[in-house]
Length: 397
Image (cartoon, rainbow, N blue to C red; front, side, top):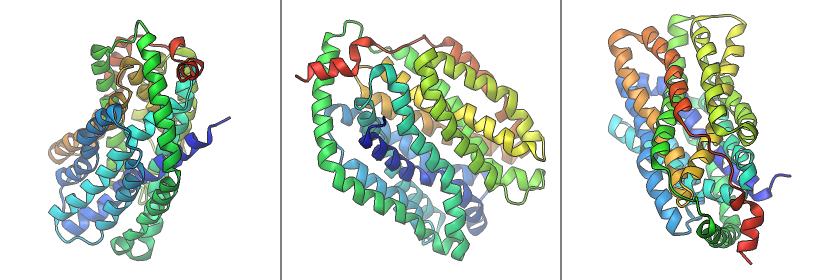
């Protein structure tokens, strides 16, 4: 049975990540309104997610030392408010500021939310529990384009303020839940410290974490490249006038993949989950980019499910590599690692400006080879019985 507070955390994750699905749909309108190049479109992506890359690990370090559940309602509000501002600014500089605000909202929610999700799970079922938390974010990614199309249908960019509504409602809910979250953090943090002190092998494995971060960076480059360039590539080179449904299919499939990927990693190990993910992507991504017709949404679903299936797996893997710094591990995997995808979009935007979008999409299609190499290089890290729910309960006595 799913813990009710874990479910609330997942809902919050859904709301805060709506913007990451909305922004790719906004970018063609912003590009037209502000007369932007592919490179400048990449900078918008950089401003949004690289904010998380810079700030989330800092929040993660602070989260390891202090209890900051108040960040969650504040972040939920900011994530929608920043995007709402994009319809009211009149310069590219202010547009970047608005996007930065939304990115900071995303940055503030994830470390504290994922740490709470970690404390609400058994270590042997950490993948499944983190999958529940992560699937909210995946659904937010997937539903974001639909929400964007709905809100923009009223008056274009002038009606984008409607994206604030979910964030405001979620922020109010989390304000109500704040006392309970504070109690959970206080109890579990104290118990976890006692367990780690008794765990002889609870050492940080920084070298393996670097490899894991490179894996997550590769995955993020592939994912960000697909969702940001589909709205440009498919209309221009494949004759698909409204490719938004493919973005949504890809991202919603990621939610399905996350639900399956967490339990798979619990049973067979995170390393195998990451390896299978990249192998499936390598086989299906090239046909998705080049084929047309009825197979296209099916391929979009397979690629999305396979690629994003390791989202919760890599977070749990990182937390096990840094057992003494759960918040930092969460911030790095959810923030810095994922945020590096925006760097990839920027670099791929430069490539697209110089050699064309078709060649750029072909480059994206072979990136899973790098992911396979990195997955093979990772250690096989499994659950530690010493950090089970029973141990934490005993330590809290």
